[in-house]
Length: 278
Image 1 (tube, rainbow, N blue to C red):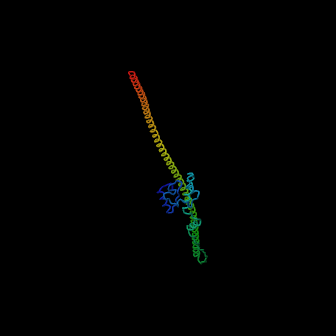
Image 2: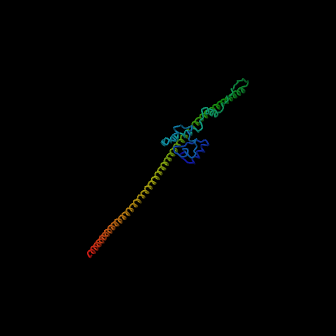
Image 3: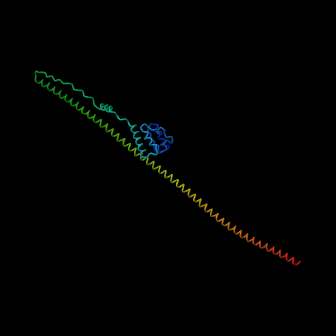
């Protein structure tokens, strides 16, 4: 299993419950690393794997090639452990003996008795019978030899067929291991591409967020600058008004001082005029 969610965990639980071998790629995370109620027994090292190979499945610092090679070796060992055991030589001998026909029964010995006969015709008849019996014995011997040759041929055909079956099984196991290795490497490449795509997507999202935050801060800075310019303009207007007010106040003050001095002069002049009349 590679990564996975609740579905992968459910399938792994079902397979593990019926005794199937589950090999999780724990370094990919997700269900394969024990999440979503993944069967804990599948995370333990099986008997057909070594500690070094099993640790490579969980080591994220190891290279993809090392983990893929370890996984292929574990799967190959799993297939070898679950395959039917090969037959021993004794079993092959038993099969060969079963294939061989029973040994032929030896032909009975034929004794030819030369009986003196008064007539030559009876002697000729006995000789012909003896010749017929000898021919039959030779025929039986030839049949036994043919049976032995056939049995030897059957024996010689059983062993090569068994060797051929072994070679075919070994070749098939090698093909399966190569296919599994290619499949695992392909899965690792797909997982690596998916992780890279996810990482790039995360970086792109963070970049967009940073750009949006920068634009917001830039807009805030520009708004503050506009507000500062408006406040500066209002301050200049107020300062100009205040300067005009001070100028007006000074002019009014000067005019009031002149009027006060003029009134004082008129009063003094009136007082002098009144004193001169008296």
